[in-house]
Image: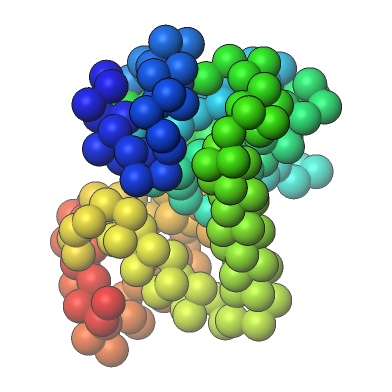
Length: 210
């Protein structure tokens, strides 16, 4: 575990902090599409992603999910950190995008390491900044991009997270992630295929215009 931690976080943290993280961290593996954290759960652990990727959702008043952003290896979740500060319940739903390995850190160590290690403080602040940027991008996409442009951005982001220009996903899952209907998504995907931007196959999409 220490070797994996050093590989992904060694350039950020000093050996003393890495050893402390290893001592208190709990290794957790989740399968693709498995819920890691749900809305309303009390946040007791901070996730550090060692491998794979997690997608973060917010729920609207009708109970429908809206994709906010992805977190991948070397990241943590700013929304989780925010809940930790006030010992509040989770306001997001975290679902594994791929098979994912995480190191779960008890929340008590967050403030302790913030005061003890400048490297941890910088990591947390940088994580807030990156997630805020992604939230603003998501807001801009909803506010300013047409749905077909949002769809292509979604597909490109998903390909980058999976490190593969061919993604395995159903039209229904895309519709749920983008908060729209499957019929609309299927129509837009066909249009993107006709425009030579993607190639459609059964339950998979190859992005030609990355």
